[in-house]
Image (tube, rainbow, N blue to C red; front, side):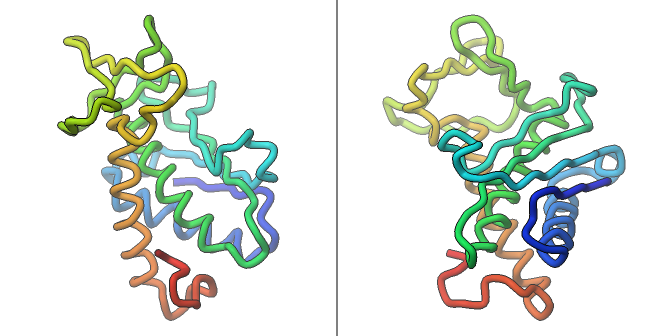
Length: 184
């Protein structure tokens, strides 16, 4: 897997974001696909992401199905908030897995829908989006169902475990998140 990082405040953060991206990908993606992936990580000012803290999308050079080049944008947080980058990166790497394995197409279809072929989550909330027989998930146009969208349920769930094990495996060398509560 090839990874580039732009906009990091220094070489140390660049190095650790590359290590983390590869670590997360190895936890989520089979080796054959892992080797084909290219990842461009860019750190931007929060205002440049229009209220998002991070996002992920395939590059137009390799659109679905089976994209292999991805762009992840992370919002620049406070000076000592480097641990945020790792949490956001873990979350977005789950979306890389979803796109690369064709679980999620990321293309808005007729009726404000996304195609989803990943795991289903039976949540009895009125906010939970409905899925039709063609695996299209009908989204709320105001994004009120964001946390119930199946790809976000999976991403938020796996983000916690990915970060936990990354910190466990690299805690002796990782220069970030040394304070209690940093990784919560």
